Figure (cartoon, rainbow, N blue to C red):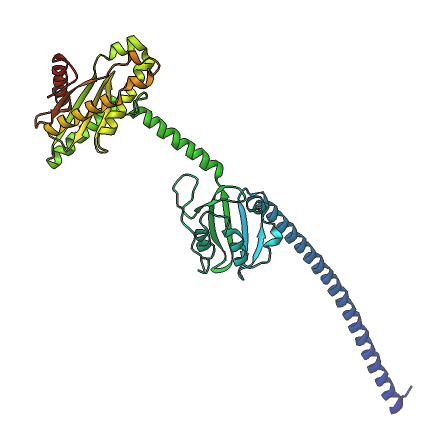
Length: 373
């Protein structure tokens, strides 16, 4: 069959329309497929976002729980110097509610706390010192095992007395500072234990060097001081003397009135020695009723004058009068004898004391209550 030219043109146009329609339907189908794929991707993204948000929220809650469980006070300040977080210990230590400081400027926090410290200026100076991009922390004022080098010890007076170690640390993101972490570490219990230990050590040291009855140095401490003073006198070419005292008829005091009265007399005599001696002199109980005094910057004449002042002081103290006030007839004078010696070039400590002991022996033999070289 022969087609006319017009029919051929109509078929060609129909074919073109069919092709256009076919391509259009295919495009619509592809667009719909893409939309469905995009919807699925969006759903997946939303689900992922929700998961991330949930994870972040859970992480934030976890971090908040961790910081709240810390025994120290934790304060987080953002880059704009506003308080963003305080843990539960903040209220326990300072008695300030977190709602009173959260979101408030750092200056408000500092002034809210400063008046609670014994030294508010120290706290203010450190709390405001965070302008350095990397920050400069405080330095400890007390070196011990519980104070780190970047901590400042502050004494809190209210609401309750506490010892706090305060530190300020920059929070960095790379090299950029994004905030500040301030911590107050409560070391009240540790300080109390540390102080108790120091008191115990001091007490033990005192016991090792002090005569328990009279409170003056014991023989060991007296001997150590004597050796040190001999070395000092020789180094600087200065005079040095000693006086060795012994209470006269002390055994009779114990026999007649008892050891408690004897102890009272020993304490009274030690007090006379300490009152008469200078702060630079050394007073030691040498044994029993014997006492040694190291008299600095003194020749033999000066040592004799010192010993005579001691004898006069003992007579004035009259130690039996106080303890036997209900038995005035029994009161009798307590006297002492003394031997003195000046340091000689050839003396060691033993020879030095032996010469003073020889003088004491002479004083006893001559009738007591006197001083002899």
